[in-house]
Structures are given as structure tokens and as C-alpha cells.
Image (cartoon, rainbow, N blue to C red; front, side, top):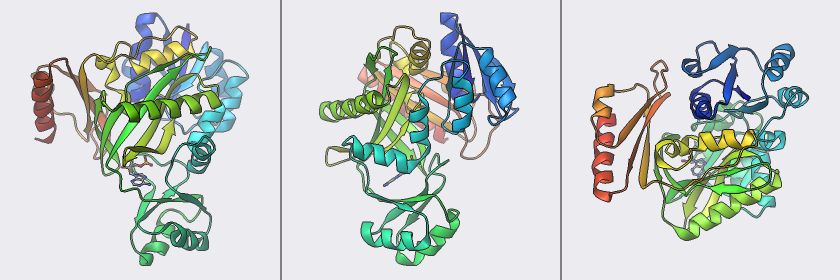
Length: 361
Ligand code: AMP
């Protein structure tokens, strides 16, 4: 069995690592030449809008999946004519566009920040009147890690915000003064069976995920999050891992965005759950039975941003596992992560402190 993965970054690398023990081979395709999945799997350089490249790629594999949302709809069509692709095209198109995503949340009764579609400066002025300030102006497409966003705090910033985000295809969202952020990851197979990971607590800094902790013990929130994800997955007859990120305010969930793929806030599942999100995603898209998502104690994941510290420093901490993606150091770039996992609460706290200090020092 061979799985084709569009993209060859760290998510593809971790999918490939999870696939190989099951004797599922992987082939990644990425427009870039310098890709970190190449350390563990066959990779190929090619553009998603090149029909010959895509058809050749699809003809060499049994199933196709993707590691990020920026895949043209046309590419999905070319692949689907040759071999199965999952998650579905509709879920991908929805996740590519913040307006479609929010319309879906509304239609399914999932709370989301108030929002307005912005196609002109006058739309923006009217939307600011309607939603009030502060409000976040975002690009509808291609935003990630807080990129493509402008926080409007005063009326005088409206035209600067409009100009700085390219003057088209924008969305204005009410700013939510949330208490904290969580994410829910589920995985659904072809027959409609769903496995649910525990709710994950997430800490961001400057729009980039820094720390995830699981399980986040809040029964009401977790029940709500699982129910929302189930609704979305059933709506799309979804196959694979699905992530939804939420803000929490007054013990209510407010959906920020969905990702039709494995997700950074689920990296902890590699050492921290019976079956990782990567393995379960591969199992789902290959029509194999899903594994348990039970957590193995208390777990935290720290993203390494910019530059990986020395291996010795991290690996000398009890219960810490280092994932160095092998990427070139660059400010604000996710270059690796560290997971800690412990059953004992005091061992967990000690490891947490030690990793936190090591990554800051
Ligand atoms: P995003 O690119 O939409 O995932 O946003 C990145 C981060 O910006 C989120 O994880 C939040 O910390 C923050 N953020 C995004 N949208 C809002 C909002 N409507 N209100 C408050 N904070 C937000």
C-alpha cells in the first residue's frame, strides 16, 4: 500500500514515520526543493498546478492526502479522477476560506465570532460600525500562524488595515476577549466510526502555537467540542483527522477555525496517546480500523520556534522527547517540538518546568 502526501514538511514527515511500521509506504510531493520529509521518505519536487506531475504522482499511489490546506481545487479534481483522496474536497475548500468556514459553523449551530465579508473600504467601515472595536481584519485565504491579520483598535486604523491586507477578499471578525484556547481532534473512518482525542489546551504567542497540554479536564467543554466536530465530520462524510480550534469564554466554546488534517496541537499524541493522530489519519485514509485515542497520562508539547537547542540539553530532562524536524533555523519558524509525558503529577511538573526553562534559555 502506498500513500501520496501533498506537501513534504514536518506534518508529512510525521505521517510517513507513522505509516512505515504498518508497511504503508509514502511518497510526498512539494513545490519546494528543500523539504524535511525527505529525511524519512521518498519525496518529489513539483507544482500543484502542473497536471502531468499531479497525474503521474496519483498514478503511483493507492490513496492521496495532504498536509496543508493550500491545494488548488483543480488539483484535487485531477487526483480524484485517478485515485481516492481524503479528507474530502468540500472540507478542504471550506477550510481554505474563512467566510465559508464561518458560514458552515453558523449553519451547524456552532458558535463563532460575529463576522462580515469585506470586499471594499466601505464594507469595512460599515462592518466596524456593526461589530464594534477592537476587531480583527483577516485575509479570507492563506492565513496561518497569525499571518494575514490586522487588529483594528481605533477608527483611525481602518484604512491602514485595509491597505496592509491587500484590499480584497477579507473578513472582519469581532475580537473575542477569550480566557484560553482549546482544540479538538477527531478521526473518522470510511464507515463513519469516530475516535475522539481528549480536549487539548493551547497557548499561543504572537499568533503562533507555543504549548499544548492534554487532557484538558473539563467535561462540559469536551462534550461540546466533540459534538461540534462530529457535526462537521458528518456534514462532509469526512474521512481522516479533523481539528477544530476554539476560544473559551464563560465556559462556552467559540469556534475559530477548522483544519482538515493532522494538526500541530495534536503532536503530543505521538508519545502521549495509544494511537497518534498521524497513525490514525493514515489508518483512516487507507480504510484500516482506527486505534484508541486514550491519553497515556499527562502530556505537554512545546513548539521549538526559530532554532533547536542542543539535543543534550533537552534529552537530559527525564520524560522529554525531542522532535527536530531538520529545518534551517529562521525566526518564527517551527523547527521542532518537545513532548513530555508522565503519569505522576510531580514528575510532569518537574519536566514541564525544565523544558520551559531550556527553551527559554
Ligand atoms: P488564526 O490565524 O485565525 O488561527 O489566529 C491566530 C491566533 O490569533 C488565534 O489562535 C488567537 O490567539 C488569535 N485570534 C484569532 N482570531 C481571533 C478573534 N476573533 N478574537 C481574538 N483573538 C483571535
